[in-house]
Image 1: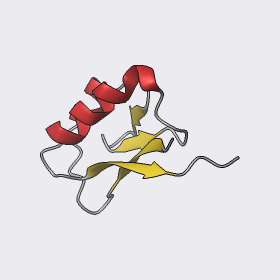
Image 2 (image 1 turned 30 degrees about the horizontal axis):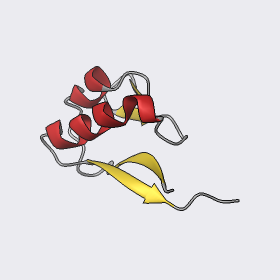
Image 3 (image 1 turned 135 degrees about the vertical axis):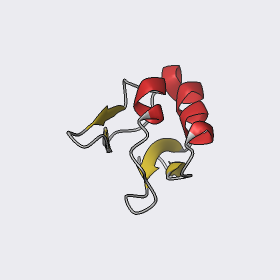
Image 4 (image 1 turned 90 degrees about the vertical axis):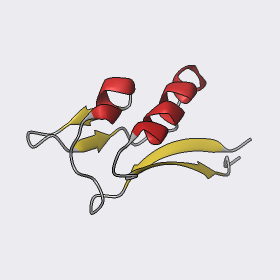
Length: 71
């Protein structure tokens, strides 16, 4: 099964902060309001919240990517 990770496009991001409100377990905001992402797979318990954050981003700067699980 593929692991999911959140990624942000720092050029597209406009620091609205919606993502951090929707998934505080995975996203903090820096002093300027830009997202700082946790560098780990998205737990299943917050996967739907992560998808909602991606859909809610007004700048379309947030993505949920899949990577193969290493054995």
